[in-house]
Image 1 (tube, helix red, strand yellow):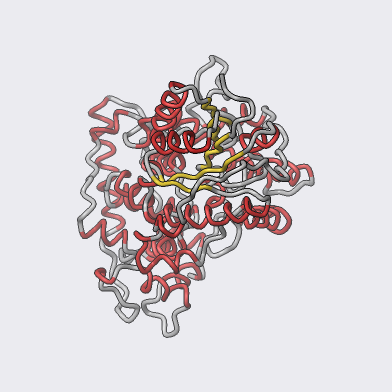
Image 2: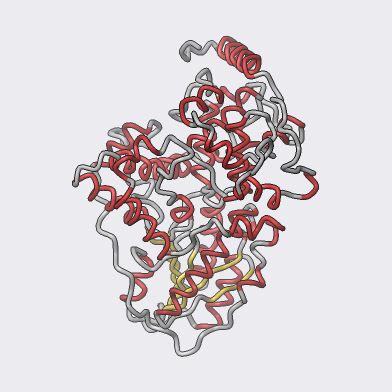
Length: 483
């Protein structure tokens, strides 16, 4: 039986906050000593370069927040089960608690940790908090998972997620703290090379910055959000994705802020709520269909003639922002400098790769996984399959974004493009020049070069994609609308 006075190891992962943290709230209320822990485990080791660096920035902020409460963040490196077992032995902890995650890697790891700890008599307990509602909680009328977003949002909208929890004032501390690694020794920014400081300067890590960002958005910009969010040169979005992916702010806090704005009559509030709910929908899909992270959700797309070669000149031009298609190149460069990319620009860049270039969406997914500081395993996979047409409730393949038309509609003055593309400008802005300081020297790119001609004919690429789509549809006998 667990000693009711024994410490609780509170394992932080993608819940790097103090407020509205159900596991921390329960641990602090228990009266037992609480030992916050973060691991550089198999989940962290699997992260791409930019997400790893961003995690390090967040962990540093969490450590400072805990210290302000008289607590500490204990850092250890190694496989999760082995490392937690060692900490249990060192501290006499009777329980390990954490916030539940839903991606395949986390579920496999957490199942192994649960089995290993309970097998030795240590309590292992997972709490909600990463989503508004756990994936099993939102069900269709028939009791199954949702596949279409509209009905999912309606069902989620009818559920009360509960009120956000306050941060604990001072969690009970143990009599003796275990030893901790030094965060710099983990070298979470190593893979970023010379681009690390450039990308880091664009980040807003930590709970305090996340809360300030939400408050400013609700106070100043949510009214115009439904329209302004489509224009990449405008500061029209919440920019909370980097904070949500690491749990520096809870989705419940965002949801209640959106509801309050809706009650005040703010025009963009409903759209904001839909975006928060889309995150839940992505995790709902990933939980019920784990294969969506690595394979086409719709099996009929497995025979589609996408290229999976990531080393072609065409793919490299896309990765390096040298396609000669300005809106797409601006988007790819924005990501390399800031670790983020405007949402509409993401759709256009993804459409160019999967449709005009006929490259498998997983090639793009892996590149984004390495470059985005707001990378999320569910959103990345679901959004890529949505654009490609192979996912649930996806955009039909024959709806192919025209980068030229999108540029005219959403960047008519070329402000976004000039912000990120230096070539051809007599006095390029610092944002555009920063790209050349961030990229590998081996790419041999210079702002003094001429801007490239388009690497493909957009009309011909669109026609080839539609022909391949028709051939796939006819061979499968499928009725899927008309291009």
